[in-house]
Image 1: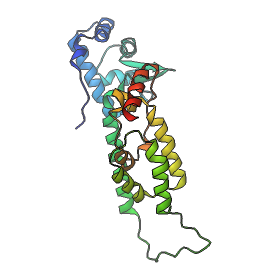
Image 2: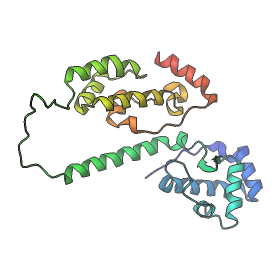
Image 3: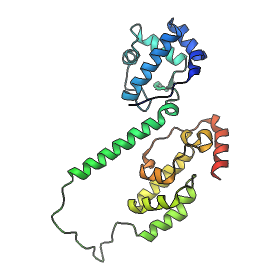
Image 4: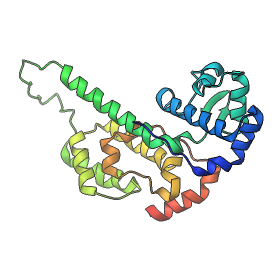
Length: 238
């Protein structure tokens, strides 16, 4: 069962008044349609992007039976939807449903890994030893530990449960290209809106981030309004 945040301030918010005025409906009607629309997005647009749907589908998601173009434009005018370069998306969607999206992605990855493990045929031939001219692709333990201590750990902003993070890394045995990807993704995550939010308190522990393959996540870039959040983030993670 999925859920989204619903704030009591919505009932008296100027955005709701604008929507009611444009559509000529009551606040209670507008609140109900917004929540039905958001529930629909959880199932069919979990990232908040709506470029795959036309106005009729979006209006039907909110059970709006009148002019669909008018309904979508009213949502844009009231800032319930964003329109950037002609692409519609739910305003601040990841702020309210970001964790839900991440949890679903993690569960999907786990199911795929389990399915690959079950379906992968077991070899009947013994593993051939690695010859002198055939270097083992697995990274040596000491090299991984050096990379962890000198590159990953100093770069990760939330320094918690170091031993657990190290054990997970050694179990992963990432190749050198993957190590570079991890560091690049980490730098992007450190400047994202999700990690800068409320002074960085939503940054996952490094062990959690590694276990969930956090370098595969997509992050919403922080805007210019996040300067104060970035300042708090730096103070917390210094």
